[in-house]
Image (cartoon, rainbow, N blue to C red; front, side, top):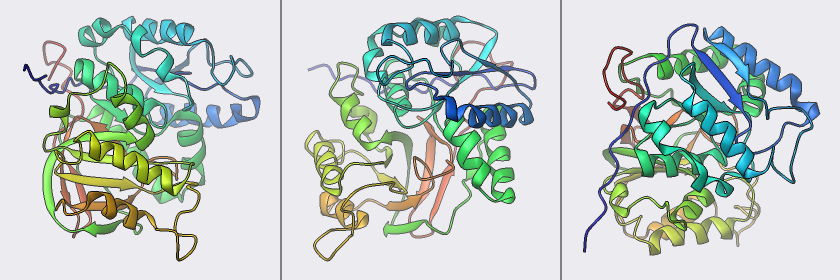
Length: 340
């Protein structure tokens, strides 16, 4: 039996001042009442030193069912951005429920020819996983434009906003490893230990869905990986069930560590003596797998996101509550070739 080789990370080139960043509707529509938040996100990106453009499908009030447009139209616009040499990064306006509809329509040759950062979380985490599996593209599981840069960032204290702006700027423009991410008071050690490995993950239900498609990551991709995940909505029992899926398909036997985001809107989570909290659910499914688990880390739907670049090596020390990016997420401007 021929085993699939895990992907090698494909790093986009570093952004430079004045580079063009496009905000696009890669999934959900733009509601009219969220236009001010979108405009605030444009201001943030300009403060970081970039030119900003809105893709045509990012039009207030435009929608097709729960999406900004039919999947084929979103894919066509996305492919156009991937092929356009002037576009140096793409940030999703919001999440949604659409990426599954166009996974088979993405121009992966355009990605390997000119890899560029794609930023977002929620439904966009499915995009990161599949593109990493197909091309090795380092996915920027980071804040969305409208609810993130233009929303949660604005509600954060000024010092936190400044910290995030510096972190995102360094992530996109710097070619040295960032090192330790800024730890918050919510971080908890759920199982002590230390490890290093490639960061792979996203929304828990999107990880499960990705692995149910023909674009599933080879199981070898999870060998020694640090699995990060978060969840929004649903029920505590659904989280337990999705983790059981990862156990049954062998992923939990291959990873070397786990990082769990702050839960958001999960029903029945620790609401009574009969309801488990999130650490209890995680440790129940892990059983006797002796891997470090760091919990309640600020990424995902619960607030401003720390960036979690898919495919980059990280160091995890759960007891000390540290998570460090050991490699840069982008390659130097002068480096020849698409990879890195």
